[in-house]
Image 1: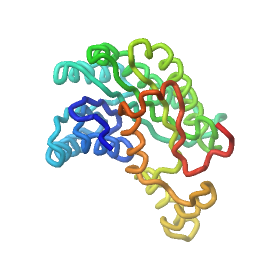
Image 2: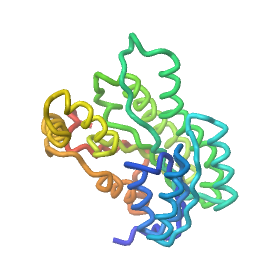
Image 3: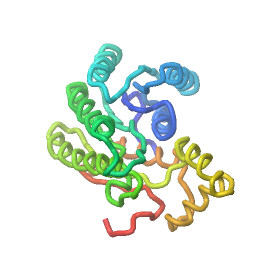
Image 4: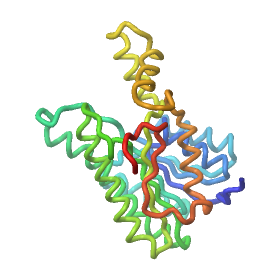
Length: 264
């Protein structure tokens, strides 16, 4: 299927590893030029070089902490200077949390609010003129199944991801007259490096291997009985960036192996 994405321009936050990296690769395979950011400057530069070499697309890499407004503004200025316009924005940067509400301090709440919600607000607002310059485009916000079905050990993550989903809905209603389609993706169990780190730590305490720990998590939670690869999830993101998904606006899509336990 020709998705018609060749020579479009995509901005991806948190793009040096895991889901963001898989999305960047998937879009680059379609001939999309990439502006990509992450905190680790060395790693994001290496990723950019590999994308250029393997897919012959333009890649702008930028070291950016998306919890800091000034760094976001600087990245957007660099995108404007380098590309002058944007077709796709993927608000992907984020990570899990681990706390109780009683013990988590204001600073931790604020950090995750800036990471999961305000970063999406700032990038969407800041890149709107560049999307309009192209006559419209696509914004996809990477949320989580936890926005709907919370996990007990990460209340801050659950709350901020739920807020991101509501922001996406409001943004979709406001931006569709500008021909900018906004949607939310809610992944379930995706086998990212974070999951391997967790498995390596907790499996030792249980006297099992990391792979056995992950297999147990998948069997306990998903009817499909396994984790998805980042590439499987990225394929859905790539499709949603294309005109093949032109009637998809303001919705939330679960890519979760059947983990969601209610009708949505």
